[in-house]
Length: 101
Image 1 (tube, rainbow, N blue to C red):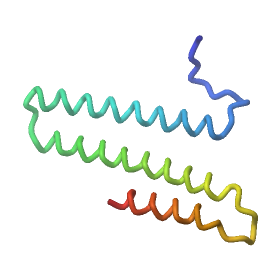
Image 2 (cartoon, helix red, strand yellow):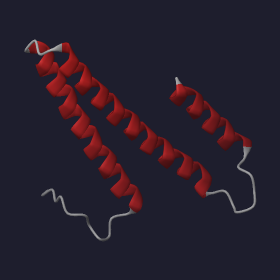
Image 3 (spheres, rainbow, N blue to C red):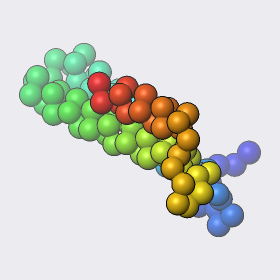
Image 4 (cartoon, one colour):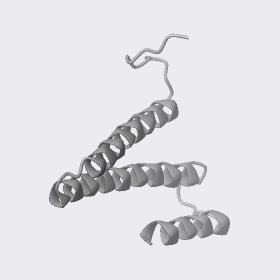
């Protein structure tokens, strides 16, 4: 199966979003591999710390995107004008508690 980097006009928003997150994760994996090489090569700590901070920020950005997707999925089925049910709110609270740590 051939892989195309062009976006398919028929691609669902959910699939497009998953592909974007996967691409971002691949980029972070590359950053981490580069950081490992920096450590193995004995590069200055300041340079390594800068790259670690960049990778950490990228991971937090991805976490935020996944969290937004989760919140959207939780609220998609809630009719306008009605509050989300207790299960959805409880799940959202649990995710928020884990995310803030």
